[in-house]
Image 1 (cartoon, protein in one colour):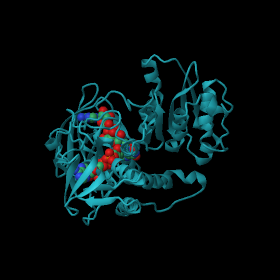
Image 2: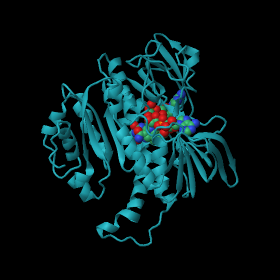
Image 3: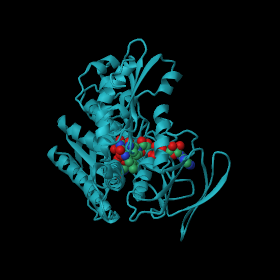
Image 4: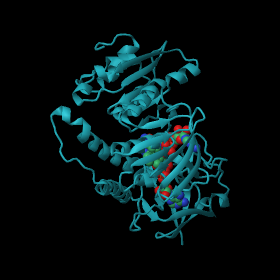
Length: 475
Ligand code: FAD
Ligand code: NAD
């Protein structure tokens, strides 16, 4: 006999586990299936984000930033650190502990919300009445029936053609988060989010880092002013970033990984690295799901095809997160997961792609929401821009990091906020004010009128809003 559920969620990453919890909160009988396992074989719900993505990368970014501060940043505070050293295995053990705490937290939340968890690979096994049969293979083997199925199977790293990840020399994000000693020379292919974040971790710990980026522009998705300044700062920090690079042969040998590449001017280079991180984007994951057997529509790039409500071509089958179109971000997956659970319950939620924030957790951090100045120009929108540098912000001076600025873009006629771009300490937290402003249809003048605590970094946001109207108080 197979147990019937109102909702079966396949995948317990941020899209899946949050969908399962929300559906359970709404009174539905819910099962969630996930195949990720820890070293000892036990379940590790949380997906890419928890196991080899957001959480472990931020743990290592914090550790390496602490090390960098102790090495270079504390002296001016009168703190002298003698005999500074880094114990990489201990740093990795801490990261693993943080990951395990998050895995356990999700298992606890499943119990608390009465979500039945099945550890294993979930696959479609045909129609069952007006629902779908799902077969679980693995430690939690079972046959389930779901009136609704939410596919939240995430993504996997994209390899260079003909260069598979061995996770020893040629590393995906998984290997990049588990390097056991500081590589003398680290190569990074792709100056995207992973390349910059992981390159920063190992540079701070002492690696010579060379980043090879195919595009001629740096951080093409960011506002041009931010991207320009970020490139300058990262290069000054010691990241060797080569734009317009074409990677040729890549071969692993006993002495390292050999990479042939051509620079933007056509100059040929041959480099040898101790390790090579390949971070050139990610691919949607549907293998294991047996999607073909039921005719689930998948596009030519491997994404499950959905409409704006995350409905697939099959009745009662939904898909959310990295496995569908849109940005591959944990919070985007979560928003879609919640919205699908609410739709199944008959509600009418809405996910606004125009107010999804982006964050790059380098130092300084880079964060933005809404449109960039170049997008507004391309869209022919008349706008006003206001910027304020952290150099003129009291809290930033007290912290000892005045890099970067806040920039607000507002409609020239209505003053409505169209975008906010931040580069600097805690940009990831500051951007929430821009998200809030845009969600509420606020104007730059609204932000300028709000009382911001002193001294805070957020005063730079208020000043940038004042700058939109040409009336900064502290610059
Ligand atoms: P996933 O997290 O990939 O989860 C899918 C789950 O489904 C996995 O556990 C998978 O094993 C399981 N699964 C797949 N198929 C099956 C099956 N047939 N049966 C059972 N289980 C299955 N995003 C941010 O917003 N902020 C960040 O700081 C950030 N940092 C990142 C750092 C790195 C190094 C990487 C790689 C990614 C990062 N991301 C970040 C992106 C983020 O991790 C993803 O956008 C997010 O995890 C997607 O969530 P998801 O639920 O769609 O899929
Ligand atoms: P990405 O899309 O951010 O960057 C990939 C980069 O590689 C691009 O700049 C691209 O031009 C370049 N590239 C592609 N092919 C190349 C080649 N052959 N040679 C040289 N360069 C090449 O992808 P990513 O960094 O791999 O990250 C994957 C996903 O994970 C992203 O979609 C991102 O949203 C997500 N992620 C998010 C965060 C965050 O939110 N802080 C952190 C890490 C990852």
